[in-house]
Image 1 (spheres, rainbow, N blue to C red):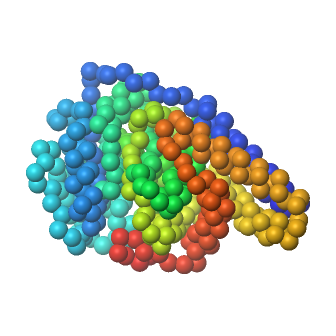
Image 2: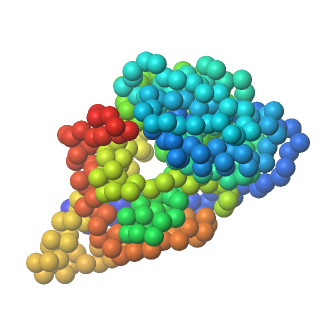
Length: 359
């Protein structure tokens, strides 16, 4: 009976996110003569090779050079990074203080030195589309948004570890966009996030969660939704997404997800906390149902099939819209509940490594 209840709640929740995703309107793109000015903020640590690729993307941005600047914030890098050779308005800052949340510290430092009206954050291992700022500017002009979220996917590789992460990311983006469609957003990705400096100051920035290693994106969004829900929007456009590098080992992936999961207990959003709990219970119940199936309890089989169908359908909705290819769905479907449950438990009791530091 417990299995039916847990899976029932999970299916209803995922179906609601599916409806939210389909309900959320695609953004229309019209070139606007009046441009928004942007400060692109990139915190980095030991990203020498990745920075070259990212700066090359910035070089191709279809945006007037007087209307954006790039602020790179070096968080105690130990490698020999170079930013010369690029015809770009770059400001390089160095974090001098030690912090429990170095990324938030880096972004705050950048905002203090920013000369533009809007902040756009991304990561050093990302690639951005050439019309990234154009579409952002147009969207801001045609909405009342003071904060704009966008999707993130992984740069294509040919191995199962990548496929596993891309399916997971597609599911996360479905839930993210679905929550926006239901007008209860609680999640976003700081690799593709923009907000006005004025709005950041009205929200008191990251005040209240400085002690958490991550969450420069999610906590800021949840704070904004709580105070000004109509000012937070998602730019839904098939070509408006940032691509990032996937983790190259299972260990690094596990630690990354532990870092992500660790902030869920501090969510201010009720729906965010509820979703995290329901997903954890459903994945734990999936493991229990597989064990029962192994011992001949065939009555749990329809539950496993239903969970698989809603998960796959949700991921495919996003993949089809953004033209993202998903592979190894069945293997991921079987493995992910074990991985996700282990991450959730470890995030409560264990430590993790990130950028050469232990938390």
